[in-house]
Amino acid sequence: MLLTVIVPCYNEEEALHFFYREMEKVIGMMQDVEFELLFVNDGSRDKTLEQVKEMAERDKRVKYVSFSRNFGKEAAIYAGLQYAGGDMVCIMDADLQDPPSLLPEMYRVIVEEGYDSVATRRVSRKGEPPIRSFFARMFYRIINKISKTDIVDGARDYRLMTRAFVDALLELGEYNRFSKGLFGWVGFSTKWLEFENVERVAGETKWSFWKLFMYSIEGIVAFSTVPLSLASFGGVIMCGISALAIIFIIVRQILYGGSAYGWPSMVCIMIFLGGIQLLCVGILGSYLSRMYLEVKKRPIYICKETNTTKNEGN
Image (cartoon, rainbow, N blue to C red):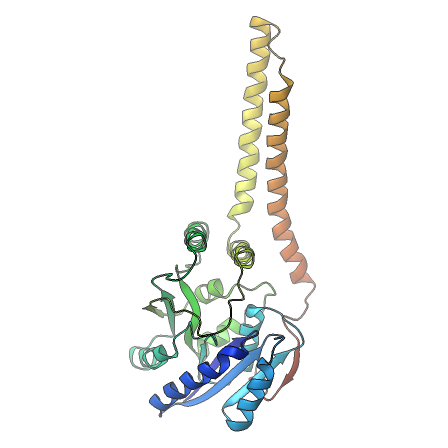
């Protein structure tokens, strides 16, 4: 049994030593499993690639794929899935916020209980800024109400998958990727393991509030068309309100006269309606921009160098 651990890396030179040491402990506990550690260097600007190459020289289990520039974590995950040669594949962050100690239990669940995937979720957001936690919870509430794909609150990308599960993911070659949604969309039986939030072992998070916000928009647009319906529904409602307001003004003018004055209120109404229109245009633009990127058929990533090969069939 070969198990590939995919590790997306972007400026993780400070954490790699700690990660490798923890993985050695786990590998020692799972002696009946052959391991492949696949590091995907996502255009790091520090010495991440150099450290990975040094590990590869010492340990033949270490493989790497290095991008020509930063393409983002989603591209790194997709590349890892393409290059993974294992019968089982695990995705894990290098900062140890995904505890490697859970891997033996995840492996046991798949082997003994027959699941296709074992996923993880945080049950707390200890150490995270309160406003960030609030918006994260709101995102999961919203997307689960407007999308048919189940996306679990607190879900991590950290999961162990069978080869069938991985092959299904690779069938989804879309450019705009939202893995948390893709994992749920392909189906298969999945068991969830819960754990307390763990602080980064070293380095700084690469996810600013703005990046997380844009990533959430990506997820909503990728897995729901409800915003388009809301834009149309809002337009109908505003047209109805405007028609009633016109009738009210005409009747009031006929009955009382001189009641149609009040340009400040008219300006406010015009600005309000203009804002609604711009919002609807913005929603349409979000969907069109993603269609534009898809039809260009650009590669999800560009590999600059590697010491391994793509899995056959991918």
